[in-house]
Length: 248
Image (spheres, rainbow, N blue to C red):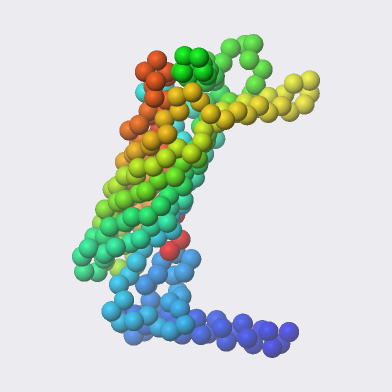
């Protein structure tokens, strides 16, 4: 046990020792990497001319909503989704004050609307109807998964304590969509879940912004594509608002 403690102690000292050098000062903690890997630069100290990189693994924790035939902020507060983006941070100016971000992204959508999305496979449409007293469910949810290629222009102050502003967009593919209803029948919990809509729009394209400080930012996204593409269907565009967390 004592040997294990000593080994962990030496490993910690080695990590701290490798973190004390950067291109702007011998005795300042390095900020070459942000977030969870903030103080680690590998087995050797970072090179003197190494450019700092930021926002390469980003999680957007979002409130999911839609706009169009249904107005904003009418859905349940528990409409929580998650975007996960792996990005390259490509510096365009000295000090990485302007950069290009590009990568791949996964989006999980969860909209608790507590009403009815009615599928008509014969007509190829999806319509929206309010909940009625005869409907026995307590929760009604629309959700899905999509994959996309995001690209964004990033502006930030120089240094690790930087203010940042990202503006960008993405184009991708809606892999699946589902509807789910949860209720209680005869004293037992009941769940009904079905996949697919007759006119689910597979192509997605959107614009987004992030405004924040260091690893944290406010996030807003708007999808220009309709959720359902038939003109006779309910016309909805997906909207997301939330918080972005960059781990490194």
